[in-house]
Image (tube, rainbow, N blue to C red; front, side, top):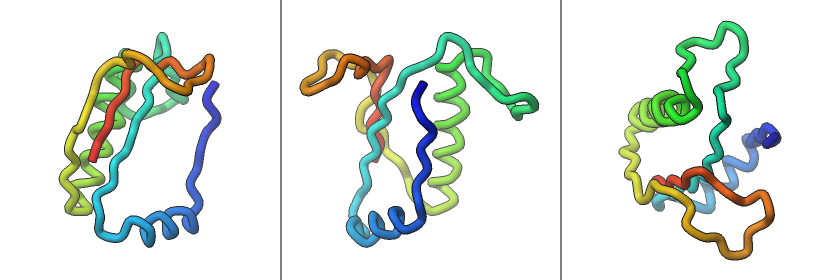
Length: 99
């Protein structure tokens, strides 16, 4: 199980100062569950983990970016072909890179 990660405001502020007005590139290393794991009462659950990511997370990300006046651009989306300097658990179903 992947631990839940949370960013502290101070880390976000530090990154904003370092990046300035430059572009930001986000690398998504994706591993999908056999079946989605939604908490009870979750709004708009998807039938499988793949659509949960692409319709749920990606859709929400696009809406949030648009509200900030940001036009995200997909740089790469596809399967992991090989890995250099990777650990035993570093196999990903898909990789998506967004600017």
